[in-house]
Image (cartoon, rainbow, N blue to C red):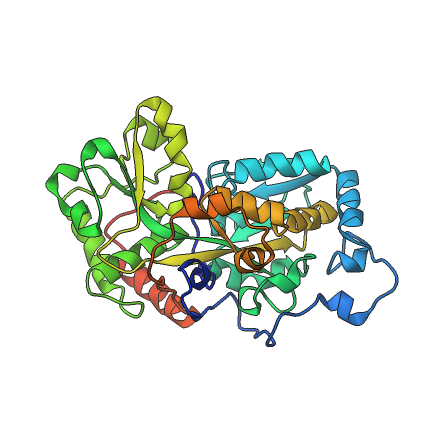
Length: 396
């Protein structure tokens, strides 16, 4: 994801909100448990528990005596450990800074360029050491496969989050989404669509953000390329063929792009999420690089959510719960929005008048509804990729 770390992602139900009054789109999410209709209050509220529970094990802020009590306990723990959250990815740098300032809890951000499976591996390898990640930020395929590793928790804004964007028991919650884009150095000329990338002048210049079998941007980049070449959510073959051709002619390179490879000119064209690349525009300008981010015009936009979850083996469980409270608060959701990522509570915040209107306008969401793979389509696509993505290895 991030700074080009990417992970296999969950589906983007929120896109129907941003795409100017599109009706509703089908949404899918990790796991097989279904949610009941309508917004629901936290389970602990429904139970009417009078006594405050332990903030380290509480399933909601209400159960622990409120957000302040949870975060006070987190401050006593002194730290929350994140993983795969680089500063430029969806404005995580600002999120971390603001959280530390507000709550006095140190944020330890490990392995910023890790992917979803790396997060799970790290948690497993470091279990019980005190150095394991407290928080996961995962794509749907990996998230769905490891729900036994999550601690259930429902933030105070639970009722604002659509049922299709959360596990009914609070094991995971969709957090933010974006669109697959082509980002490039404008010195190369204009690039508006996938077919442009076949031009011989781009030999050795095109990078895909991560291996499609372990990285969200890589996976969804293949989906977007398939749609641009006559494929569909049920047929990724044209997308795989497109990248195979780019590899054969030498345009696609076996490099996992990051801020440094972009700044150095090693990867002047990157297929990645809008929110990841949008954050580089201001960073690269002082270096004399005019970085442009476009949603390819030769196919419908592709979008996907990531998922927030608390490690049930968290060394700092109260601080982890405080972190979840912050990222799903108005402040946290607007911070993601300022990083070109669309937060899951966007619709509720628009209705309440708490959304940062300027940040929302700056996102520049496509005018047509995005394609959103169902879980079954994602599973089928993953199976196809395992059998057919063998012509290039993208490290990372």
